[in-house]
Image 1 (cartoon, helix red, strand yellow):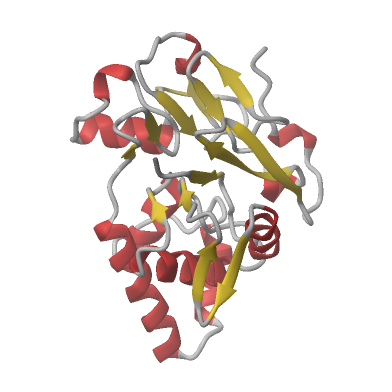
Image 2 (cartoon, rainbow, N blue to C red):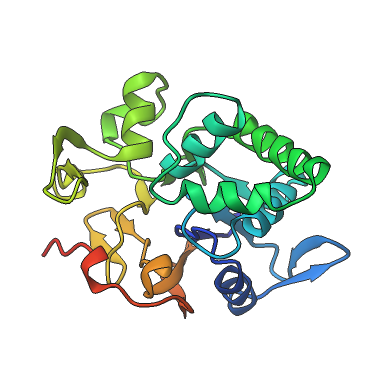
Length: 246
């Protein structure tokens, strides 16, 4: 049985990502990522934006995944960055501006090399991951049980943004239904997207976005152990950015 370490939303927090990988037992050798127990890191999206070192995160993760040392599925910030790098007309806001600024500060050929590597990563990655004979599902913002095994626009919207209603909160955030409390799953679903103070366990799901970019922690779920490993954030704490469900 393969063993996985599913890592929550990094958002450009490269130091914390490095700390967490070390805590999980990974080491770097000759540009490659190793684990003595042959564990596999799994990144569930939102690698970039808002944090201090998005370019380092996107390049490291792209290298590891393309070298088949790690797995990845995209988040909504990854999707928007991909569209920007592909020349689409997107609003450069909600954190994308920090990644764009980093890329623009680089020599043009280096920025193009990193952008092309990230686009390759995105294009080769599934919307969500079905692992361990389908016992484990990793999706950035979650997934409904009836969507597992399917593709298409409805699936893409759900795994990138969650169970959105189309309405907005006063501060501009989309209104989302608490899908994790509504469904029963045959698989175990690991997701992120919505920052929570501590990993939120609900039925056969767990949200491991513990808000590293907002001063919380960067967390990983160890599978099949179903234990959580976390490291503290180096970023300023913003209590208002965390969601409370229960």
